[in-house]
Image (cartoon, rainbow, N blue to C red; front, side, top):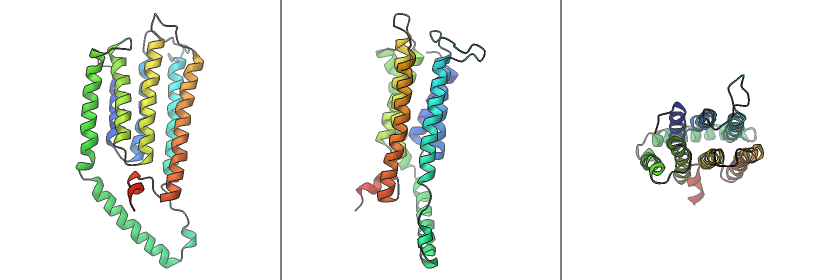
Length: 240
């Protein structure tokens, strides 16, 4: 399998989403992943370059617009539910107590986030997913090239593993978007093969709309969880 720069971008960004916890990093990596996906498809010989002056295909443009929309939706959601509301209803003593509790929670969170065991499971699962993504194109090739097979296998597996090891609602959404990106890549590659019927703009637009709607659904779910628990952490659902 030829080492392609866009494959490296896709691999690192999806792996970073799987390993990292800070939404400021993971949402940025999601956007980078979509741009890597657009670049990978844009250089394929079976993808026609519609905008010749910019050497960009309409398919790559759709992927970039979809990535920007999905990343913006999740970023606004994270910003919205990381703020404190209702402070104007508290007196000065209540606000002082709230600030004290917030500082204590921040110290505890920063201490817990440095523990290696929190990253051990995502790391080991990522190694297993990467190994499977390298082996599956040899065992069961589907796409026209091994690099495309690796890319869509890795996107789907890293998305599933990100959901399985997620610690908050946004991480689940990021994992779902990785899975749908992998399926989108597989469809685009298989349907563009010489023996296939060729790409049609409407199915591609529908796939992109599904991904944007998925990001909106995650934003709505995050709002429901935050409204009930005042946090997006999944572990709070199991606490009494």
